Image (cartoon, rainbow, N blue to C red; front, side, top):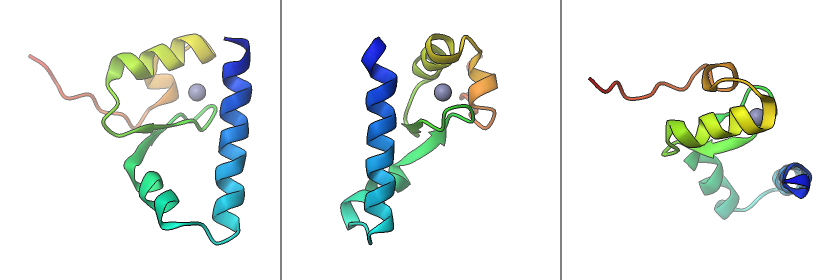
Length: 79
Ligand SMILES: [Zn+2]
């Protein structure tokens, strides 16, 4: 997993640079599709992301819970 975080950071930086220089409609589309952001590392996830994927991120990256990283995420209640 050593390269994962580094690659993600680089990708994020590239995205920011692209946005600064005017951006493209493709980027904007991608941005709106990403609705869930980790409050700790600011990684973004598609709003269609499932709780297990977010929990995995929280656990693997930060040794925290889903709620710690994504306090705004509301899982569809299953009863
Ligand atoms: Zn994170």
